[in-house]
Amino acid sequence: MTELTKNAPVVTIDGPSGSGKGTIAKLLADRLGFALLDSGALYRLTALAALNAGVDLVDEARVADIAANLDIRFAIADGEVSAVLGGVDVSRDIRMEEVSMAASRVAAVPAVREALLQRQRDFRAAPGLVADGRDMGTTVFPDAPVKIFLTASAEERARRRYAQLQGRGVSVSLRDLLEDIRARDDRDMNRAASPLAPAEDAVVLDSTDIDIEGVLQKVLELVQQRVV
Ligand code: DC
Picture 1 (tube, rainbow, N blue to C red):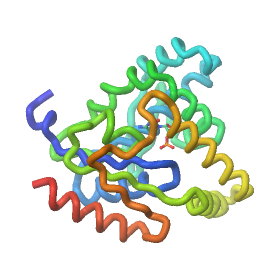
Picture 2: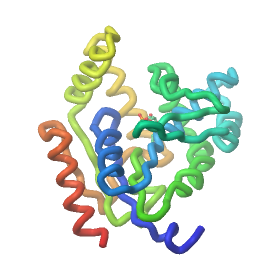
Picture 3: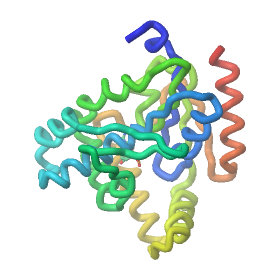
């Protein structure tokens, strides 16, 4: 790793599902010309690979082995990032509800987190990186100059997801979505390994009542203040 890569600034954006961090991370990386790490996709890919291989998710050693040996790459076409597993584009598959639930389970396994740690750090490159996840500011990039913790109420996050699914013609119940979100929050916040929590030096932003552009402006101000 070159000095330039090792010292490249990182903007970490952590928070629960549906807080808008994926959207913010993508817009921010575009504006700054930085690389983007969607760390959740790595847990989703691990989960999908385990499901495809018929591995029982309680078999932590086998799931960790899958995480350590993932054959993946991220391809960019027309500004969209696609996730490729074993040569197959699985961008849609990793967003399925079954894979989301499995990802939350594999993400609670310490050996899986350990196996994915260096892979995440390898995304750091000049001129900088925007890293989106749950423990980017606490565990993966503790020296990041800008750390954001983006939240929104569970009800608002369920409403956003509902609107998104309706837009795609998927019929779901708002109440079920809210329950899923609460279950996932509970698992992400209460696991022993790298639980979802703001880093001590993170700036906490609540997106319940601010739109995407408002959040983006606040984050850009922080980047301008802290990254020279
Ligand atoms: O952000 P996402 O919904 O794509 O993440 C998928 C799952 O992975 C979710 O349950 C949280 C978990 N995750 C994690 O534990 N640590 C990260 N850095 C990113 C995601």
